Amino acid sequence: MEKQIRKIAGKDYEKFCKLANSAFPGLNADKWLENHIEETTKERLFGLFKGDDVVAGMRTFDFEVNYSSTPIRAGGVGMLAVDMLHKKEGNAYQLLQYFLQMNEEANANLVMLHPFKVSFYKKMGFGIGTKNYQFYISPGEFPDYKEKGHLVELGVEDREQVLDCYNRVYSRTHGMTRRFPFERELNRPFWFGRVIGYVDEGKVKGYFVYSIEEKDLIIHELFFESPQVLREISTFLHSQSDQIKRVILNSNSDELLHFVNSPESGETTMADFPSATDNKHAANAGIGVMYRIINSVNFFKDLQEKNHQFNPGVTLAVKFSIHDEFYHSNSLPFIVTFENGKIAEVKEKGSYDVEIKMDIAEFSSMVMGVENAYFFLRWGLMDISNESYSRVINSLFQTDQKPVMVKAF
Image (cartoon, rainbow, N blue to C red; front, side, top):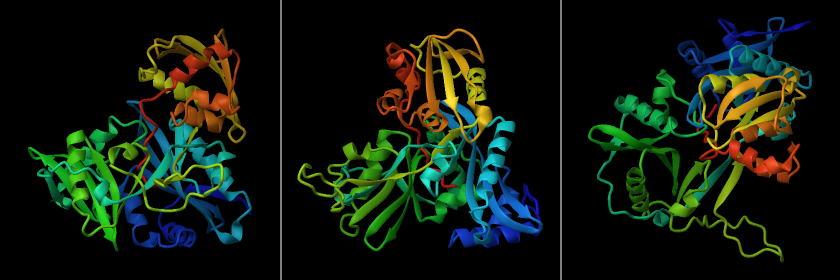
């Protein structure tokens, strides 16, 4: 029997939720998913049907991403589930092909996901994103600035202000996704615990969300618009030493290592061997989001239309020869001419100064600023026709920071 992909609606919600709950224990999709999807315009559910049966499904997202100060459209996919009776039938492959085509048609040339298995998605052209660090820090190691007068507990009645604060941080943070005023998005910070905000002249200029589990204080969200906000949050955390053993928080950056007095976790999980010095464990590191460019030509054309500024010191024409085994239409070579860091022309043929060759997974990671061109050259993951251009290619895609992803999807 032929399989068909279609949008979930009506009585199919129950079938999808059953499939999702089986794949993701504790999800309880039947209690919230239908109402949420019907309310938001930014998410959809799709099922792969065999007759009337949903044998696989996925949840898709329409994101607005800050690409180094330029807002771009991006697609997201999550809740990708396959019925256990229908595994190893190419169902996930079929859904992901549909997902890529759907986003390309919508001119969303970048897509993202959180992998259940990195190698599986890397074969499909997804590149690894910024590492996610999990820190375990004693409260006393947070500096005590002797000030926390602006900190107050926020309630659901403050949710619009919390959303506005988040979006101001988004607007200046590479990689972050914009939040929209849908019910679940507005209420989301308040699900996880207490919300403490920094309020100055009636305006929320930073906030964090925390809960306590035994002797651990877990920070679910932390956003601040100035160092002053961070100082007061640090003072708050420092003052919890009598009750809390560890502050646990996730971050795409290792900058926290330099902010606290000591980042040592107290864990002894680093292996000792004769050639190693005595390293102190500071954080666990994991793979978070993965990125994929699905139409490289249109990705650069979109940035050209938006007058995006790459490194202003770069003027040259680059031929990109990108290999995309999973999505063949994205394998066509093309040339981008940059003038003072802005895209002057995107074309299929013509003269150029230098050519680079990469697989789409690594190319996606580089363009997003996860790692620089030097890294990919050093590890043999990029070929360059003239090594004298290595420095300028490296500077072309340099971003102020690695992409930040705080959205769970």
